[in-house]
Amino acid sequence: MEQELRNRAQDKCELCGSKEDLRVFEVTPSDGTSKSAILICKTCEELIKDPSKNPNHWRCLNDAMWSSVPAVQVVSYRILKSIASEGWPQDLLDMLYLEPEVLEWAEAGIENENKMIVKDTNGNLLNDGDSVIIIKDLPVKGAGFTAKQGTTVKNIKLVPDDPTHIEGKVNGVKIYLKTQFLKKA
Image 1 (cartoon, helix red, strand yellow):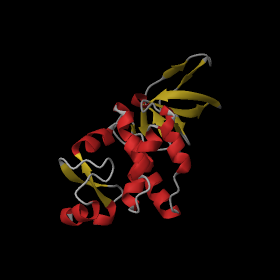
Image 2 (cartoon, helix red, strand yellow; image 1 turned 180 degrees about the horizontal axis):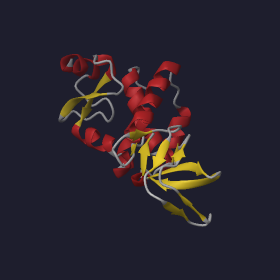
Image 3 (cartoon, one colour; image 1 turned 90 degrees about the horizontal axis):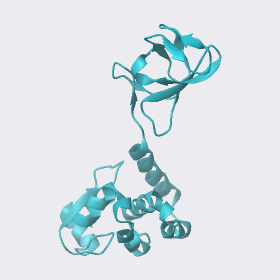
């Protein structure tokens, strides 16, 4: 597969054009073929993990995003999306057109990367809509009652950017609960 990618990319990084220290990069979700992989340099590989570390490096995507290779388009889209707050990447995103199935692939990877993992006190995975049981009496600040041990909280919601809390209703009042005091029902 690597030789096939090297031929396709003409022995250059498919993102920045560098000819040094090239390697295969799987674009997830992947089907395991060269269609879901790209050839990139070590610098791009390191920066893909945190594109905001050096956003100016990604100015090369101005050219790469027009590649005829869907996997290159997907990676370009994901990187530009992650650094869009810089200003100039949003301009490139506004110009970029992706076929519907390529856009779906790009968005699927973003969802997987950004999916927050929230666990109860026993390590069970919690999702929106789950039910949990309170394992300790918890005084509810500002509401004037205590959420009693054994109370079932149905249809919980995960709190964005905070894997240690969930949102739910107890006694008809919307409250935030720490996951360390909950077990999945």
